[in-house]
Amino acid sequence: MEAHEASELVEDEAGENNRQKNRAALTISIFAMVLAITSLGGSNAGKEITQENILAANSYAFYQAKSIRQTTLKVAVADLELQLLREPAMPAAAKEAVTKKIEDYKKTVERYESEPETREGKKELMVRAKEHEELRDLAMRRDPWFDYAEGGLQIAIVLLSVSILASLPALYFTGLALGLVGTLFSANGFFLFF
Image 1: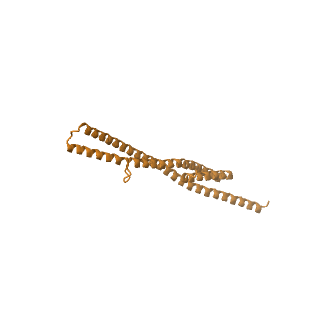
Image 2: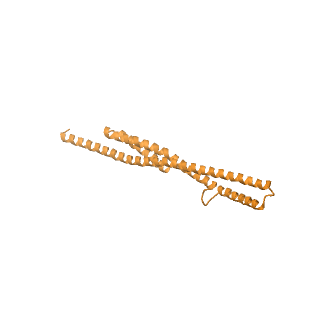
Image 3: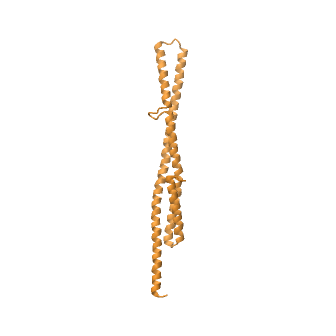
């Protein structure tokens, strides 16, 4: 082999080595971008879990408060009705006032049961609580996929970095495969394909 041929062979190997390093560096930058997006999605899913859980708990607490008030009014109505029965000789004005109070309490009891215009009746509060639970559960199904994706992408970036330093194509392809799986998991975290 002549010196000229040896020089061309060394240049070809150096060029191929640079292309492999550039390919690995570009792949690292792409996976780093996907990792940043995945991290944001995972953070948002965690916040959504907490927020929706608090909103569901608040709706249930409001429902319980309405139930307690409603029960208190039902007991008051029963007491007033018994008072009317116990005292048949009650003066007409007092009887009228007690009867009016009973009607007012019954209307309030009905309003506590369902109040569509304000969405603050027990029926509407229960629906709202269930909606918040569904959103929380959806975020809980999404969250682990972001965790898996972050782990896979981080390991992929490490393997790709080592493949540059060690010039090992096997590490590049292993890192690439792991990064693609991490990217798939990230997409599943956002869209729940499976």
